[in-house]
Each structure stands twice: as C-alpha cells, then as structure tokens.
Image (cartoon, rainbow, N blue to C red; front, side, top):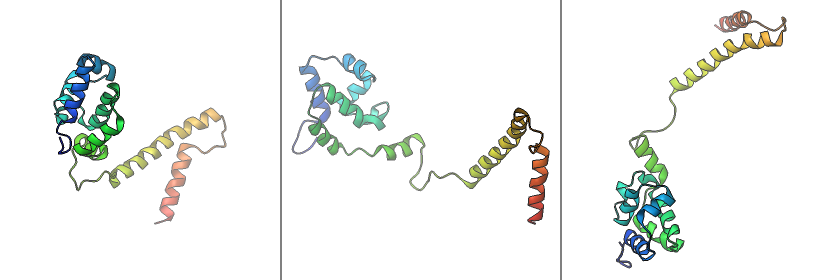
Length: 154
C-alpha cells in the first residue's frame, strides 16, 4: 500500500480476477504455479510464496493474464522493493553471509588440475593403440620424461 494508492497490489489483482469471473485454479493452471502462491499474492503474503525469489515475475505474469497495464504493475512492484534475484539467490539458496564470497579455493583448483592430468595419462595410451602407431610416446615414456623435467628443475 502507498499513500497515493490505498489499495494493495494483491487486492487489485484479486478484484480484477473476481470481476473477470476467473477462478484461482484456472490461473494457477495457466501460470503453472500452486494455488497457494496465487492466494498469497492476493493476500499480500509474498514471503510465503513457494519460490519467493520469482515473486516479481509471477506477479507480472498474473497481471498480464488479467490484462492489467504493465506500466502500472511495474510501478506497483517498485513500491514493494524486492531484493534483486542475485541477492536472494546468494542468501536463500546458498545460505551465505554478507562477507562470504563465491570464489573457488586453491584446493579445488589444484584437485581439478590433478584430475585433468590423471585423465590425460589414462587416455593417452588408448589414443596410441587406436592410432596404431608404434612411434608415439607411451605412458611410461611420458612419465619418465616428466620425471626428468621435474628432477632437472631442482
């Protein structure tokens, strides 16, 4: 509710739906959402919507279904002050604190690189056999060359 508009967005949607003689079940079926989510919007209980992250989009779709002016709905959504979906996802889905970051640790990078090397070493002999070339380097030759490179560097 706002000072300029004493009726809430949920009430506007409910009144328009009732004037159009459309049942909640029809809207939930068309929008493919739970009836309880439609009721929550109409009762201004946005926080109780199953996936409240998507509430602004759901409200837009609901209003579009009822053929309510999109500019008016955007203005009303602005009054509700939804957090951005990025903020909601970080805090809701991952349960992060403000100071947490989403960068991988060095351990993960090291393990990914190690796994890639192991996979390469396992697949290389298969490639040699499929190529039927005896002059290609073998797995044991590759390992001995790697050992030479690393032992020369010390």
